[in-house]
Image (cartoon, rainbow, N blue to C red; front, side, top):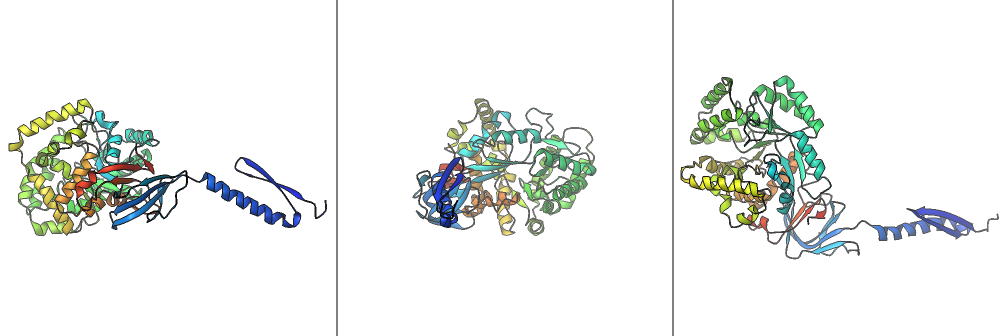
Length: 486
């Protein structure tokens, strides 16, 4: 074959086969050019479909309001944010004109229990998404069942689930399952020497963090915390009853319910702690639930009445790196009474009939006894939010759903409203339900804001939540993992 003889070149792109005939002198150049052209043509026709939200007002928990923007989502992530209509849509793209609407990051509930009421377990994922809750932190339950639930939901429209496994308690376990009305959410940790094995087993089983409970002894508490840190697991905790918040709190990544802070803030905290430690040490027979309840009943209100601001400042100043998850929705349920809201009947109608009947009986009993209910702790909880803000203690939004009449998803918006009523700005409240939970799990670079490269968990609202936090309920669409929720 001479140098002037044409040559045939064969190549393929994907499953398609191609051939071209070129002169030898131009062969390499033309082959390269033709392949490049073919690839460009192929990318034009086979590009990944995008979802484009156009003309939307972005409400970011860090940056605030940015009006008339375009947000482009591809393969579950935000790939572009810029002026409206900047990116031209292809025929394969899904475009939503969101003019006049407000886009916020998907919300988190930092304190839920999927396994507390099995009649609700299956419906909880759907309800969370309906109310814009795209991620949750399950803070106590059987680790194998929670891992199985997460696996079951992975390929469905469901919130992202991060879980701790069981409540790690002491010799006596508060939630040991001995009473049918209180499920077995907890497990005992025999001693400090068992800590590493316990935490390691939870991590192997799929747990994302650990949760330490109230009847643990100080030595075992410290050993569990050390083990978790060695294994790279965040720590959520109640304040153990044999410790004070300023001692236990700085060791943990989050503390729940604001419980037992009242003791540490009391003028006579040392005497109260000594009484508490003696009661626990001398308890040799009985139920952990009764032991804990008895101590709360005996000491909580007296501690609040003995509040010492200077002492409390000292305590709170130790907690500036420990997220407080107040669960105001739970703490104030007897005072705020969510079932009196106009939208409660329609929200409650989504619950299974057996659950609704049970809750209605409890509501009737609560109303009957309302005059005799002491709301001191409810009022204290709201008062303490202002003190946390003053001392720059981080706050995360959680509800303890479904405990205490907590409708999944719905209750998170009640929590946000209560946080604002207690002193937070609307933007701080949104931050507590987006950025703060992501930080707890070390996910703040990929979740919690509306930024390029972050997960496309988004909620579209008809009204601006920065003007009124009640507008967080004005949901028109929810996006989970880059897909609109049906």
